[in-house]
Amino acid sequence: MKWNDLNTESCPVARGLSVIGDRWTMLVIRECFLGIRRFDQMQERLGITRHVLADRLRKLEADGVLKRVAYQERPLRHEYLLTDSGKALYPILVTMIEWANAHVPAENGSSVTLISRETNDPIEPKLVDARTGNEITHRTVIAKTAG
Amino acid sequence: MKWNDLNTESCPVARGLSVIGDRWTMLVIRECFLGIRRFDQMQERLGITRHVLADRLRKLEADGVLKRVAYQERPLRHEYLLTDSGKALYPILVTMIEWANAHVPAENGSSVTLISRETNDPIEPKLVDARTGNEITHRTVIAKTAG
DNA sequence: TGCAGTAGGTTCTTTTTAGGAACTCTTTAT
DNA sequence: ATAAAGAGTTCCTAAAAAGAACCTACTGCA
Image 1 (cartoon, rainbow over the protein chains, first blue to last red):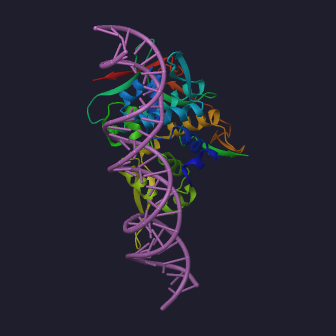
Image 2 (spheres, rainbow over the protein chains, first blue to last red):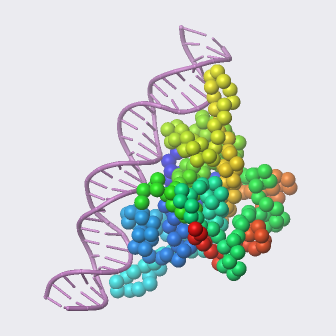
Image 3 (cartoon, rainbow over the protein chains, first blue to last red):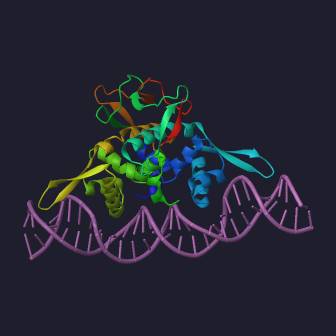
């Protein structure tokens, strides 16, 4: 199977990966959540090559995750903003942060944690079923294929 | 920045991606959650090349996500099982499924949804703070760099 | 008028990674 | 003795990413 066939798959994991399953894409998204909007700024912060960054931004725009918005004419300049679909990636980012903090040790001690914007208290992400409030684990939930 | 420098970064997003930020890795993990344990079975189901699959399994084992366990001697054969660290990836898989179902249309209508193992009811994943029960969104939570 | 600077790319060239197919090795099954 | 299963490895080609330089409007300044 070629990589590009993934997004035609019925499995949502494969479809999701066809958009964000790439070495750089989630880092670009991270920058967007941190308020970074411009090409050069992203390029410098990430250390990504300009070529690859241009490519990823194009793809993310095509996939409806980012939108390219002019912030000035003459010369025409654009910035990249998260769409609603892009903002909806936040839970993925948060669960990744949580997993990595717990399971991938940083080589230098420092790290990044999540805190409440209101109270400054650290938060402890947990995935629950909105209907019942029960925690979601691989023991309580299964995937089901629907026609 | 080279890809391999990512895992030394203090950002947990980058560290997480150094393990799972790859075209195939989460699909291999998906197979594991579906109970697939053997090389040939994974290879056939995924359509991945044997070469790349062998490489990914080696890396996942090195990163402590999978463990390689002998299920027979003579000839010696191994199977791949999720470690605790690997099982802890389940919330990432679930949030990805949820996002893709909402934001990446399948080209053929069919899809996969999550249901409760007990009641068979569909579940609706939601990320909350375990301490307060409040939903986590990019408006309520920020990242903080520590030490 | 000309020169430097800024923003957002594109064009090379070289290295890495992936795809595709065939081959190996060990052991049981026919 | 021959074939098949299971888990890879080898080799060779094609696609992507790294790295650096270059291009195209402008603006501001001397």
